[in-house]
Amino acid sequence: MQIVDVVVIGAGPAGSVAASYLKKQGYHVTILEKEKFPRFQIGESLLPCCMEHLDEAGLLDAVRERHFQKKTGAAFVKGDKHCEFFFSDQFTEGWTWTWQVKRADFDNTLAEATKAKGVDVNFECEVTRVTCSADQQHLEYVDQDGQSHSITSRFIIDSSGYGRVLPRLFDLSKPSAFSPRGAIFSHLEDSNRTEIAGSNIFVHSFDNNRSWIWAIPFSDGSTSVGIVSDKEKIMELAEEGGAGYKDFIRNFEDLHGRFRQSEFRFEPRHILGYSIGVTKMFGEGFVLSGNSTEFLDPIFSSGVTFATASGLLSAKMTHKHLSGQPVDWTREYEEVIQRGIDVFRSYVTGWYSGDFQTIIFADDINKDIKKQICSVLAGYVWDQSNPFVKKHNTILPTLAKVVRMNQRTLAAESGS
Image (cartoon, rainbow, N blue to C red; front, side, top):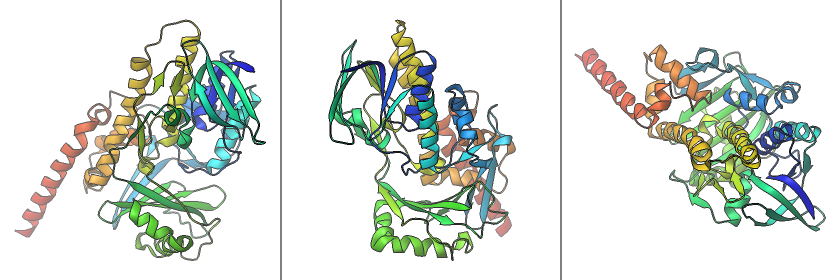
């Protein structure tokens, strides 16, 4: 039986960040990853805040060497309305750019860099049983050849993402409060990429705020294009090999024919009902990080940022715990991660209710307000000096109400 200090379940961004950080502290760390890398994943547009996490884990240089597409902002479009945010013009002091990445390449880069640091990274290993206690954790897993193995550790970090190993084994999952949605997507040749489209992510809202399209350009000349909508709409677009999706992307008016003649690099794929939460983020001998905690919605590209943020913090708390120091897992970990999740939850809610769109598409959006919103979009959702973070649960509906009242007043005055 193998004995290590920490087992990390999952080699995605959360797992690689956690394992790399703990290796720097001198721990014997093993990663068990169910899939074979490189493997496809969505969540391709990063946020500047995650650059700090990659840097602290010692993984930033490895990613920099891949020359991924630089991302300096994000644009939102709704019919003839357009609002662009540049991270260089934000309220919070921090990174002013990040990358847009093909996740197969990005995740594999992180995993290989983590392996190069001396972490034992094992692919195609499925965890089947876990027993936890105060001092010793026992895991059983099956490798690619179907052989069973056992491993014992002092602690477990579950970064298994959509696999949600411990939430599934320990019955920790809880349903999301959001309406069931889905996404359908592919990578397309983007020979018609214009200077206006640029290199940043574009988000196109339609269908009365219920649906939207992402367009995420990559450095190789291709672009990730996805549609997010109600589950029923996505299922309809996915029929007959994604024929509805292909037709929609080629003819959607706000894309101005950008992908009308584009070749698809792979047949459209779809996911349904991705929003989910957990009843708790830690327990005796383990902690959850990344999408094993909660996944909200892809609208603001928060997934990787929460993965790296929670991966890093879970590793720091694990280090503190294994060093013999007391850890208040509720206050020092769960409440911290939950605060960030709650901020983005308010913005996701505001997107689909229309409040967020009412604010950003206003003709005279205040410059200071735009800076503060920009910091949220950059992932700095723990900055309590930002009113749009501190008052996240009330500020969007309140401000949207004021904007609508002003619009009605102006309309009435112009009509008279």
